[in-house]
Length: 138
Ligand code: ATP
Image 1: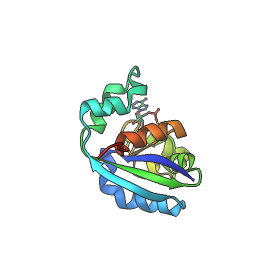
Image 2 (image 1 turned 180 degrees about the vertical axis):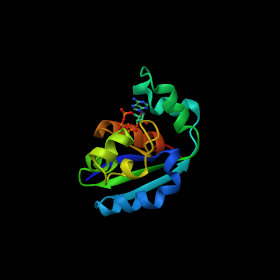
Image 3 (image 1 turned 120 degrees about the vertical axis):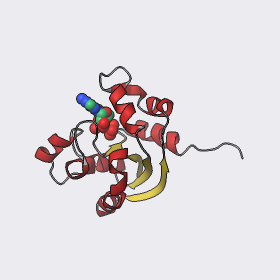
Image 4 (image 1 turned 90 degrees about the vertical axis):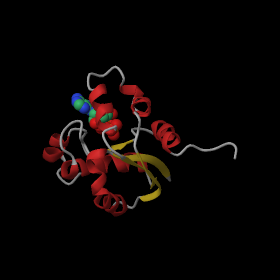
């Protein structure tokens, strides 16, 4: 079984019920969850791979505009299974190409796209540690 990091972005936090239902419908489990408001620094760190992209500031502005819900999602091929539930990055593209996907149903546009999913096992490990750090003492 794999573990991945799912993050409900500020635009879709009120849709958490629908999102958890979509996760369980695909035979995945939510094994950890945390609601938090990210600082600018935390969001910039989380999205550091995108720091040279033209949309970086919009992205950080958006994910710090309200609380997010981070979840550890577990199951067979959880990384790709969760990204398949999400659908294409751009919500408008999702509505034409994958109308049943989460972003088609709950997203607004290319930035406000409801949720995030780790894109690889390595990213999942880093992003799970970001939200759910393993402690070595205490
Ligand atoms: P995520 O990493 O959030 O799961 P993704 O892997 O589908 O999404 P990325 O290309 O990694 O998409 O981009 C990360 C996030 O940056 C997107 O989810 C979106 O919120 C924002 N973003 C990506 N491309 C654009 C763009 N061209 N214009 C505005 N925002 C964008």
